[in-house]
Amino acid sequence: MKNKKPFITIITPTYNRADLIWLAIESVINQKRDVAFDRELLIIDDWSKDNTKNIIEWYIKKHPKNIKYFWQRNSWIPGVARNVWLDNMNKNSDYTIFLDSDDELVSDCIHTCIKKWKELKNKDKYNQYLWLTYYCKTQHGKIVWSKKILNWKESLDLSYKTYLSGEIYWEWQSIIKSDLFLNNKDFRFEKDIVNEGVLWSKLRKLWYKLWKHFLLLNYIWRIYRIEYWSNQITKSINPERFKKNAIGNERIIDVIWSDLLKFWYKKSYAEYLFKAWINWILYRKKKDGLRYLKKSLKYHFSFKVFWLHILSIFSRNIVLFLYKTYI
Image (cartoon, helix red, strand yellow):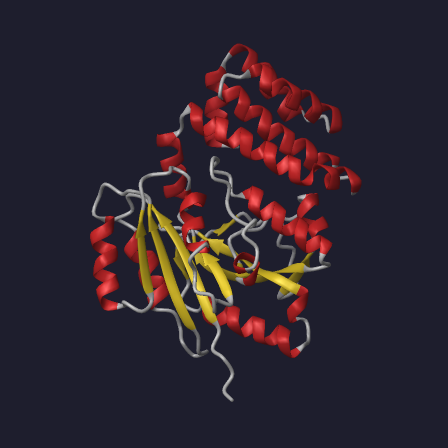
């Protein structure tokens, strides 16, 4: 009996990305195929007003078996769009990748992922991991969000405690075993906030309970248009976004705060509290934010946090500028 080919699900939410989504689609279609696999690209269009739909339909005509498309009235929450396909993905799916519509997979991404999973199976370590994570780069080749790459080995075993400590900040969009989503409807994105970190925190907490880890590989697997993303955020920033960010950080704190303190990661706890505080400040809810500021400074005194607090008393606009530029 032949071994079953791995089935990869790629989930892509989109909104008004006619200028870029074709690159995301092409990157999935043109994946290196030295290792056999089946794949589905599931696109959720969040009520685009531009030519996005026509571009997607053109690709569906060429690849009807591999691309599926769903259009919905705008939710303004990418996670809600992702949930549509998490609830309707192929039941035979082995691995899930979340790909934003302005990003691209490198040409050997899936090929490399499958080879690594096979290698783990051969070493009887397959069940130890639920998640493989990699670095990504900008379209100009700069590595994104890698605070510490200290000439480490080809791979790095990351535990829940590594995540809590904040000592390594890695790109979270990775390849995840699909049965996490197929077998548990609780693992879905939040319906009322933009912050996706709530789901990742729940999953990491689960892995800790199951004694599972996630594996960070020294490999660039995705092209991430951070400049494009930053420009979009700056243009679209509004009070409601700050409110949703604040609530999102509050919910992450609810999930992991007891573990942060149990493992004595007070600095990391203070950082989460700070993020909740600054978003409440920018939403013009000083009273709501004050309790997070007090807690943040109590657990770990930071001059950055202290001076931002002083600036917020005199000028919200300065804090807003710093938020857009540095935070």
